[in-house]
Length: 181
Image 1 (cartoon, rainbow, N blue to C red):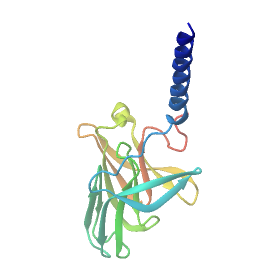
Image 2 (image 1 turned 60 degrees about the horizontal axis):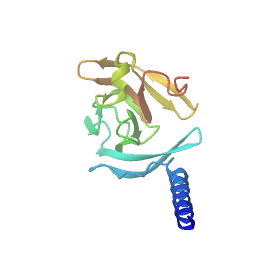
Image 3 (image 1 turned 120 degrees about the vertical axis):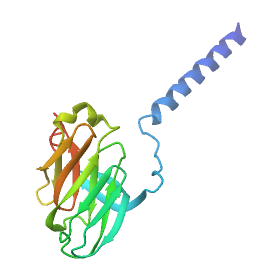
C-alpha cells in the first residue's frame, strides 16, 4: 500500500511538471530562417509600436533615368525610363512570404514618373477575397494608409498597382489601418 501511494505521488508530480512545461513557453512560435536567396535587412520599421524585420528579396542599382525591373519573391517593380530622379540601390523587402506586404527602398524617394508594382497573391489567404483587393501605401508622414490605384487580374492572381513614391505597400481587402474591425 505504501509503495502504491509513493508511485501515485511520483506520477502526479510528473504530470504537474509536464503541464507546467507545456504552459510556460508554448505561446511563442520558434524563429524560422529566411528562405534561400533572401537576406535579412538591417531595415526595421516601427508601426503602432510594433517593430517589423524586413528581409531583402531583391536589390539592384538603378541609374538616373534608367528603365529597370527589380523582382523577387512575389513582387516585381517595373521602373520606366526617366522615373528615377537619381541613381539609387532599389530594394524590395518582405517580412513574411505569406503576406503581400512589401517595403520598397529607398523609402520616401519620389519618382519622376509613375511605375508599376506587380504582386502575385496566389498561395495566400488573399485569394479568398480576391475581388475585394486594394493596394495601400503607408504614409510615414501622416501615419495613415492611403489607397493606391491598381488593377487586379483575378485569373492570374496578380495585382498591379501604380507606384510614385517608394515605401511600404500592402495588398488587402480592407484598409490595413483599420484592421478589419
